[in-house]
Length: 174
Image 1 (cartoon, rainbow, N blue to C red):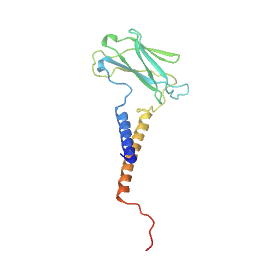
Image 2: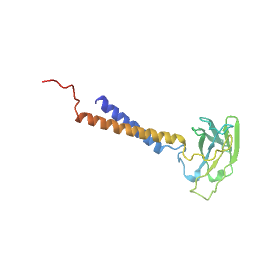
Image 3: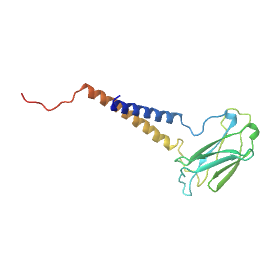
Image 4: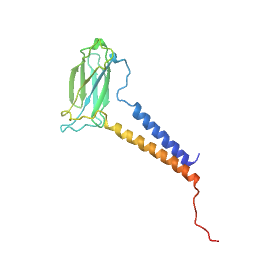
């Protein structure tokens, strides 16, 4: 296989991987039925309202002493999934970021088996108006996929054009 074909194949594979990563990625995976999941999510910001990137967030159901550790993304957003049953209604859930600690109660309708059970717990200054509904990294990923596809198509067209039109050398006199 020639170097050009390998480059085109590599670019195609990378573009496909990025595309699948953007389509299939989600911070919290549905590992249980909706009536067994309890999602704690929110934003972590500094005193000036700027997102705190890569902050460790620990979420624990104190009654059963089980929880999850997650990290904030570039927008300061985090999600943590707890496995709670109807009998866990009212359990104390503690969310910790650095030295800050917030305590909430797991509240949900035990008879509702379909609606996501979740609550928001933010840290730092108040939320900024117009909070992005889609994390910014997804826009970057989408742009990378589009650039990868464009480069792949361009490389394929360039290679095809090059085979059809031989290079012209200097004209020789008679």
